[in-house]
Image (tube, rainbow, N blue to C red; front, side):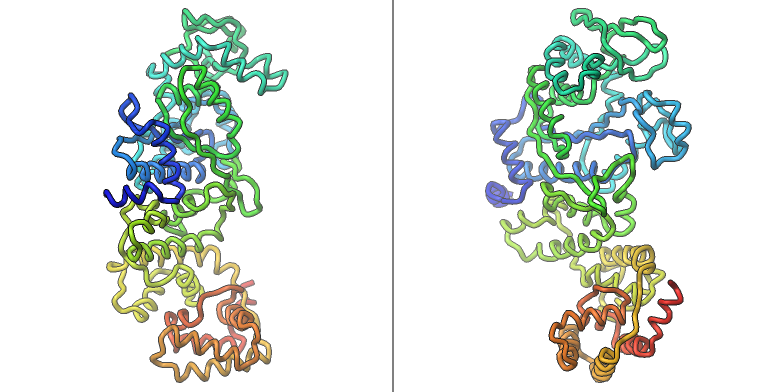
Length: 531
């Protein structure tokens, strides 16, 4: 640990840069509460979005980096604003008509449209916790409903009431003229309907700890802001939470820069200090549009995990958080193979290099030692060529290629085999399109077939050289054109694997059969029949 701590002082990976800044901010010693607090916030008005979990993954990476720099205890709170009023009905949930009746009600008072939990808020909170547990994150889940209702925030709310006019002075200039007339940082809960009310506050009594407003039935009501009878608008709420909980570090998306600036001002008004804030770029969908929780565009948690291990998603979150990235199905295979490459490289690196390796941050320093022998992209190509319907189909090829590999000795490879079958069935199979070979390509394929007849015993590298030589012999000045032709003719796709490795894995006899099918036009004919 001592050598790791020494190297961590100068590590360039962004989690270490953030951790060093945090250690400097607290003066190198534990805060009065006895620990450094990391927080991530979650608004459960829609189904959990993969970007929310990116926050937790990235924050955990910074937290682990901090633990290498200091022995100061840390905690991570995952805070859900589940007392927020339902503002609109999400587009991607069932029973949408039923939800319309509960517009304005706290999310933990809205019936669960899925019918599985106590409320819509509880349902979405459960989805959040389930995903966090899948990653194995260490965190404490915190509910706004519980904190407001239990009185845990009472002192902080009275403090906001005490500084009511100062908070208003920060917020009002950011609002339109009409909104200024009705805005208040406090949102009372109606004593008659239980809804979260967006109404003007008629009177503020800081000494009594109450606010006066007009209820939905037209009656004027004065009630305490404590005990869960009022909540804060989310920007003042964010600042209040920082101060009340003593948050030291939090991340937020680029779209929340103005909100973070306002929250920082309010936190100081309340006598606190805002946390170190890290801005990350937003995810985009395949068309370059911002991903929306309510619209459900982009990938869901379940979709990514159907086609790839969670470690690959964690890598995607680690890489360049300050750059906007597209998040759609085609990024999955690349993320998987990059993760495997980083993991395989880790044991050969010295301590300083390991701290820069993404696998170190993904696994909090406990990087698995299993070396995966076959790339995920290769498995995808094998699944496509073998028309794999199940894992056993691929394992028959793998066992011949690598006799020592079994699902028991290669658990990650076995997981990848399952993902490859699912990805092939859902994405590759529907888009495969073989074409007929031109006369020149037929000549090259005939030559390749002949040479493979005598290729027994050649390894993947020698087979690659053989394929290269055929391309050169048949006048391919740019050998990329030769390999592109092989992909289109033999695999039914424009891009593909390193052919020598593929032939070694798929088998010489099987490859020769595949070439004969391409020469006979059988592959293109079958492709046309399925269109």
